[in-house]
Length: 156
Image 1 (cartoon, one colour):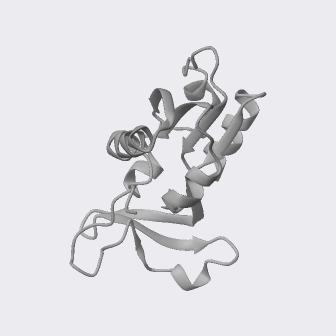
Image 2 (cartoon, rainbow, N blue to C red; image 1 turned 120 degrees about the vertical axis):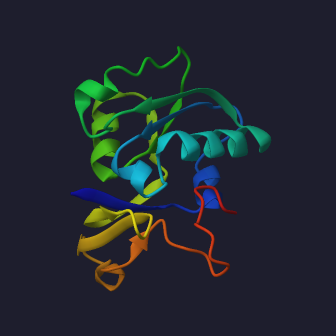
């Protein structure tokens, strides 16, 4: 079972930030990694994009499963962090809001529902959608662009 997600558009994420905030990025290395909305590569891409756009990213962390509180407890946020960008599903974001009280926690992903990972399609396939995403059933995420290349995390 995989929580299937797709990225929130980058411009919507940066609209929620301001240049004076200290930002930490926390990326799930499980389900979100399969959808390329989390994991090391997506986190690195997000970090690079934010820094090049003038945001103050002070730390970035990979957690095995963001939805597991004990995994998140291993994240040591530096003093002064105002905002935590969660590259995880809705469960990981809820866990982060519980753990990082007093911080603004922003999700970089939209959770579509539950599915499975299909290596032949190089993505997670949505099987059991959350309300509003029924038209996405059977599609693989991260999906493929028109040119045949995989959609990346921080496409602008």
